[in-house]
Length: 150
Image (cartoon, rainbow, N blue to C red; front, top):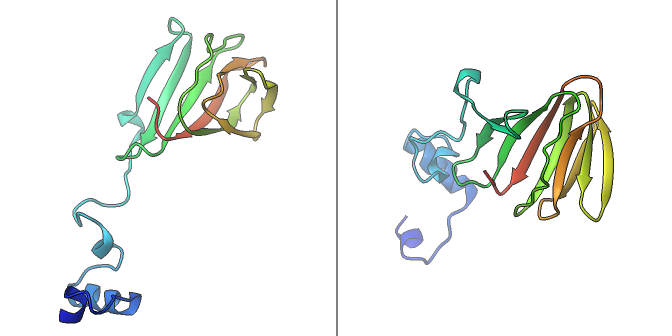
């Protein structure tokens, strides 16, 4: 231990696991900054935040955002015939997965993409983009982006 502390030797995985065992910690917990913060967060449905867009026409349910704001996920609810109106852009990358309905993803200067249940699209979020329900039922689209933007 004194060689590791003085920088004369490097720690290896086997030694790290031995130290964790002696301290009665999991090998993952020893790597965390604060062992009291669990690496898992559960948000129950009644704890989710939602907000409205377009005068209450479109609802967005925020599913989660990691503490360091590196990842965020939400579900966009689009009633029949509605859209998100004004295109948006933000830093990072985004992906979407259609849970319900038929939606058109418009990416400015790149085109319009028709997506149905089970379809996935990924794109650079800096590109102006918006959503439009083109089906005959409410749409639900799971969207995740990194870094978090809302």
